[in-house]
Amino acid sequence: MAAVVVLGGPAGWWRWHRRVRAARAAMVCSRAMASKTPVGFIGLGNMGNPMAKNLVKHGYPVIAYDVFPEACKEFQDLGAQVTDSPADVAERADRIITMLPSSPNAKEVYTGANGILKKVKKGSLLIDSSTIDPAVSKELAKAVEKMGAVFMDAPVSGGKSSLTVHFILDMPLCSLSHQFVPLLVQVAFLCYIYGILFFVLLH
Image (cartoon, rainbow, N blue to C red; front, side, top):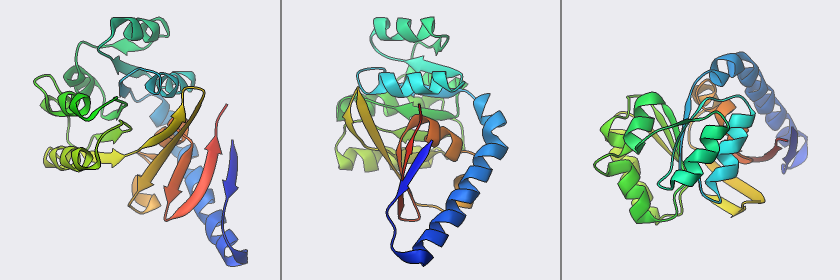
């Protein structure tokens, strides 16, 4: 793991050092628990495929769904559990990542007849990296929050061979460490915490 930080002056360096040290401590304390907690992944296409594989690689039990059976078959062969609908994913996992190609696809996965919100549990974390309209993202966030779950917008850039995910974390680090930090570090590679930019690369 490597970290590259853009900060100004000794004071900025010290603030970063204290926060990263706290984040590392949180990851160490929660790694055993996090590695045994299932993670749902919906959308196993060109962008979702490498993200989901990174989770499998780091020992997360992945609960997967995709509309294309061949995409599901690949992950079943890797040891992931494959479900019949987004609702089934929500029933089995309380941390779910969605990577979908369009706004209609995202709305169907979240709010459709067999969507996530049919069986989502209170306190679940839903991370959306789909290619969707910002207005739709806000609409989904409100719908998720009404169900007592947490919605995180995580837009992506790049492609299958070089993928960057931008997580916008609008909360104190101490509030997100147990549930969020280990998962986010394994999935992706560009995080903003307290407005501080650092780059995490996992091999």
